[in-house]
Length: 335
Image (cartoon, rainbow, N blue to C red; front, side, top):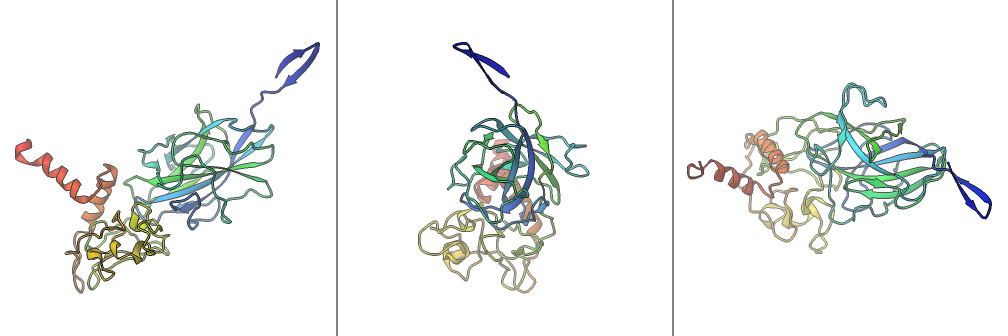
């Protein structure tokens, strides 16, 4: 504490830092808004992602005790680590590093909401017993603080993080924690956890090499070599929000969204193969020449999975640009 004298009177103020505890979390599918999609797990329970390379949302609580946390009272940051044993609060076996836009567990940029704006409450949000929850901000980059409102003793601040599975490992679990921006630990009653999508061999039906869907409860499967080439469902939950054809938004204002828009189908017709990776609802992808009939088109799925992961890691806008770069690098004239 520090003392200050005013006309002979001495006043005391405290600079004691409050005890802050990560007290709860829940993981949701991503929406391109400050709201969230469907819950991918129960509260304080690890979630398994339905696709590789998928964006998701983490909403977590930080409880304040011993003293109030004033507005912008402290700066925090997110860290992640591959899971070792369990995501325990003592961090045994884990090696945590900061989450950035380029780490395997990365921040995900949604085009509509602005970073650090006030989050939108959802009935499925995490709670902590009867504690008062104080909404804070939507975060898609960098450090964060209680920039929306002070948090009083006994209350929990709530934040919404837009994250992205940028790893190439299947069925791999990651732990996520909050620390102060200077790296000092806070307290923890639970550690958020998620698992990347399980990998399985995929057929090449459906006419595209983007095939990413995997077998998990309620998730669709695209491709697979079914008659005419299979196509998945698009319910705005089971798709990664990585393109205009899979973001649950009417991007061209024609009253049709994602799978219901012909421009998200090969050849610009609804009978064409739906391409959730196509990043335009104004122009359609070229008519598909891939995919088998009957059980045909069974090859290329695994290769497609590999190329799509490489494309995302190195931020190529299309497979054409990726292949062009490979060609230019390997052509004899370049060697």
